[in-house]
Amino acid sequence: MAADKIVMHIDMDSFFASVEIRDNPDLKDKPVVVCSKTYHLHKDTSRGVVSAASYPAREFGLHSAMPLSEAKRLCPDVICLPMNKTLYKQVSDNVIKIIQKHVKTVQQVSIDEAYVLPGEDIQTYEDAAECARKIKAEIAAAERITCSVGIAPNKSVAKIASGFQKPDGLTVVLPENVSDFLSPLPVTKIPGVGKKTAETFDLLGIQTVGDLAKADKRRIYEKLGRSGMAFQDIANGIDTSQVMETADAKSISRFHSLNPYTNDSAIIKMGAESICEEVHAILIQKKMFFKTITIGIRYADFTTVTKSKSHTVHTSDVYFLKRHALDMLEELTANNGNKKIKQINIGVSNLKKTDVNQMQLTDFF
Image 1 (tube, rainbow, N blue to C red):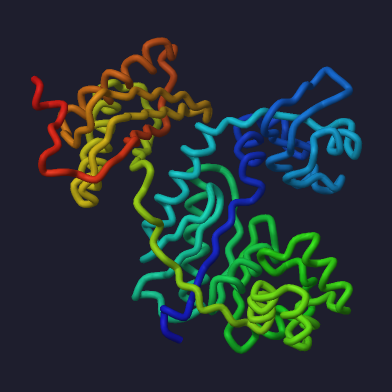
Image 2 (image 1 turned 90 degrees about the vertical axis):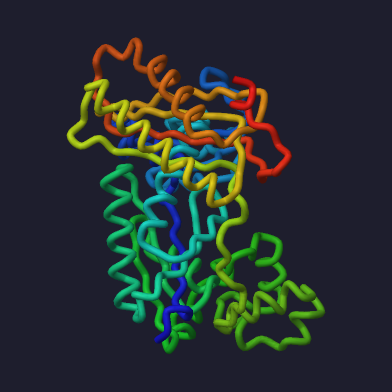
């Protein structure tokens, strides 16, 4: 089986909630939700929306997009946490970097999921499964969270497969087994089939993916148009969409792990300079300038601090990047009580394509 017929879908398990529980072990095995918008812990009229629910919370029927008031009605003891977007973005970036080390193409479709094409060295589904196991193990070791992976002949089947054995699952669907795998699943497992579409299918007597695969095409088109035909193609294991490398990045970042953990300023400085050089190399490769520098530090106890600074003019100068990154690093560690550092992350954002007429900030010095 050629490698271009193998697609992986990697999906982090209850991502926001898992990161919060990782950093606060007392929350383990408790119903936890991460909330967007506003929330009020000490009022009966809680407002907000659930963005992620831990697996214990899901046992009470809690799920993303649920009003917080409903979540608290179903589970009065639910623990509500605000979103920490900066932390989640940092963890997501680290996860993508780990994935990129093992595969050829990564199409990140959200903060917690990506489609992947393996490299030329992966020619069989067994090879792909072994690659997935390595990715899962490295993410677990570096970030202390889990992901689930689906491996299949196309994107849609791979996405369905990644949700088949959550959490921490690995599901391989061989081409000859696609129909047997899909047929018994509820039609709501097809990506994009929501509540209203499922109700329409139900009116047509369609409850399973197998039902949809065999349904009359004309009736499907009459009720759901082209989207209905696309769902029926997926039900028959057909998906010609390609895994495309994620478009121009909104940010570029790299991290450096310190092993053993250390508070030695010389070692930390060397690590930071090394990351700056990696980021600079990517900027040159992608022909990009930046205006904003962000630095993050993760300590040995897994607490994380970050700092960002924007400048007035775009640049790609490595010495400028190093100088300001090291200054920010010093500011972040000034009051750390000599805590040992586990990982340093340095990124640039507010990017733009280079222009031969663009003056760089360093031109003013």
